[in-house]
Figure 1 (cartoon, one colour):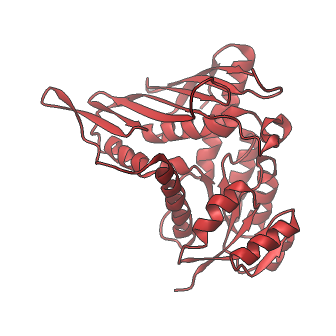
Figure 2: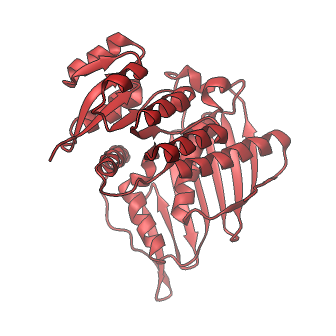
Length: 336
């Protein structure tokens, strides 16, 4: 069977350490072209991975590479909208690294363009594809934990100095909320089956940054009565980076990092999680392997995408509410 031809736009850290090494080994896929503003970098990467052509202008790549089916967008957030709209207009399906956009308005523009073009947009939310995440999600869907009513998730990690644009609001759209927070409430919402949010209250802090937040604490109340809390920070004074997601139901609970699934059985709580010896680094790698293979499968028509542009619009609605609440110091009620 013919391999699915793809192009990659943006050859920064995530592309060179994750996307290229994985996609270059997917038997069903062929990387036909790569593009980066730095032509030297593009040519170096093309030679390293035996890719036919390198470009410094994505519009030229889209115009010339008519055989490309899917475009993997690994550029900085402030370019996502323009690159995505151009690729959709060229008739390509997309994978866009998180976040899809800086605001809900930009996300809506991309989602509407995808519908108009009849194309698929997947947004990179790799934590959904962690093996432990998928197992916990299956337990929740099978009602093994009863009715899920509360989830809490967080990610505490030092700011990556390799990406200075992350702290420039006009480029990033925001601070740690759009870098780490959005990943965690996507995971929590997904675990809970995307209940409709009713109210958001948030507190943001800027201890070591100017113009964007470096820490955020968020409380979200749903119309069905369930709740989610999210914390994210570049500046919490902790000994090490930390990532977690805990989900609580009427018949049990589940957690990631460490992986546990506790279920009421004969009057006692029993850990029913399958044994796993994967290290955090292995789980991280597998999450991207699963995600990128899923994208290639969607390009081949094997299944719909997980983490769609519509999901991203939902996330950005929450993001906008977080910033509004943090700015006013009041809760924000969400309109349906």
